[in-house]
Image (tube, helix red, strand yellow):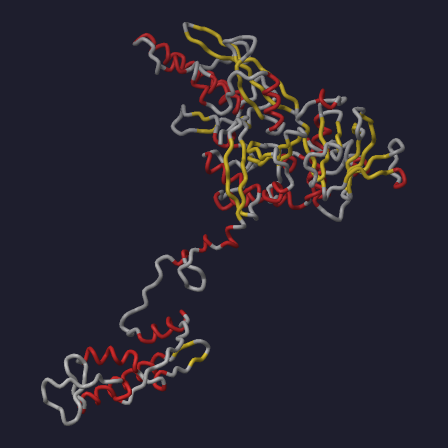
Length: 568
């Protein structure tokens, strides 16, 4: 009977008892529960004076206790109860329920912390932040190619710089992060390319590129080399301040003039300018200032009425021409150009220039970067050094990775010592080579050579090195050296085209590329390699390269930077 009564209460509660006070869309739950309890007590009081049958019908007065007489069904109005009206219960806010839950929770039970706070939004709702549309729209897709033609798709945010992309690719490719990697903007239709500055936003650069253009990931040792050796990049005859002071400006002051916005350095010299719409070139005297690149209409005159603006620096970038001299009918091989940022395919908007030699071209392109970006370039150069500063307790001169990892040592005494004298280091290397030679001869006498024997590995072990590039032609080695920056000590080793058993060492020195042949020599049944016609012999090419990384020998400079090609 009580269960039937409860089912009746669910639809017969008076409307006056269910009126809810709503403030700010919140429901007073305590008042609602009290009304329900009072309704149950009122209904239970009717059961004492009105007994019910098993089917829910009441007996009339006077007929109580007589069997076989079925009265009329008990209507709701007979009990003084009227049908309730449906009401709308507003949704309860999550924050209000959370506060009430904290009030009801006993003090002995501490609140359970959220084990995954990073998966929830700041408001506390379990919504993944990665699914929010405003954040998903900030990511972009770029494709980066290696020098071997392989590509990799990378998802980057809108504020990701070129340095960040390079560091990401270095980690994914398991390369050595020596702060010499760069992202290159390559335009195959125009035959142009340039290295992005470390602070440039990759997404903004990609927005101004055509569909055929792409990014290339490669080494660039000359990116900040002008901060280390400024005199090699800025000849005195091309810098106006040096001419005014008779060439007495120190290198540090020369760079400060370029980085200081209050100073007005000027690069001047002769350049060949390709006429618009024609294949002819015209030699003009040009001046590079902070306001732009100018050429004189009257010989070498600097008067304002004789100067014409060729291009400004803010809305333009300087590119290296890769298509070659014959295609543009250029007077020399040292081509470069100035292209507006928003120009994608229009060849007419590109101003083609040609220098007399590599040093003058490097000077023009480096000065363009310094005058355009200023102190930002110096900050980009200092960021990697600041990251490494806490790791080094002492200050050391800036050297390459190969120089820091290799040093000549003498272990003949009780303690080892560093050999500073190059003559002594060369003699120590020769003695070590003779000891290796005697050891290999002794092993050949004791047993026959096997595929894993050192004498067999000496002819193929160099193929695992990053500086070895196999059977490439001379022109290809020139192109690789030029792309990775023509700095002193940049080298590679390749197979010789004239002698199948020999090799060629390609080395860059003073922005000129030179080739040295490595010849094999046979002595006592053993094969040795030498650069100086047998005076200094080595068992394999690895020993030869390691020796010339420590000693200059017959080379114009030491081997410092290996020319590498990384597959993404």
